[in-house]
Image (cartoon, rainbow, N blue to C red; front, side):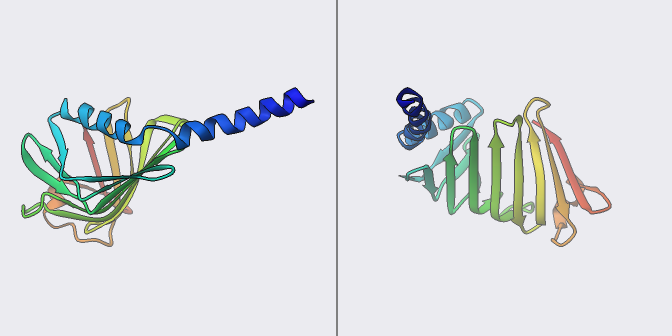
Length: 169
């Protein structure tokens, strides 16, 4: 009975130990390295580690040397089988005709559906829900009718519930 109790305690404590002592900053730098292979650079950020995740403050995203987005804060956290990223006050293509302001973007990934990343957002377009299909290399977004579409109309298809955006990557 004592051995069973020790095994159960080990099965509970070991995953917690891995999550709490995971090298979060090093994983973030690995992500930056992988993005740089796609010509995407993140700079100007301040990193703060916490118990379950990492907070990235004031990052600027560059594509091929040109600034494409800024954010007030990105909150990243993972508990082995579930990962979540929250982007706050994200501004995409600032100063361009297709500027997009995103109040909050919530992205989740789970081992239960390893080939999909689920997205929800509140932006200047309105409420957005969708997913990124990793195997098909597709992004699908459903945009509610409550926002201002403006210059984005040429990229969207009309649907019964609002607008739809689909693209490959």
